[in-house]
Image (cartoon, rainbow, N blue to C red; front, top):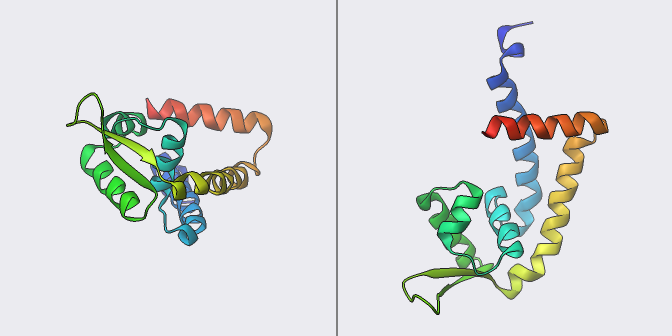
Length: 137
């Protein structure tokens, strides 16, 4: 056994690489990345939020989020609209394509999550989620 087998950074990186890579492949037919998928799912839960609020919720900086939003607009998934209250402020909305795709994208996400968690028992799943949440803080 080498040192990397016990290195938490290496173990997390390899697990992330595997899970992210598999999910990325699942989203290729839709022309989406995992982060774009996350943005769409977030908007489906709260349409009309500002880019700033969306960035805070997803922990994405303005530059990163701006590029993601532009690609989603170009792909016909979302629209940016000026706020009625403040014309300088933008609000984000799903398009018809975005709304129509949410159900399929949610199934892809649910299936990918199930595939990751299937190797664990119920207690292990709860612990894994708790440990990952703790690491985010």
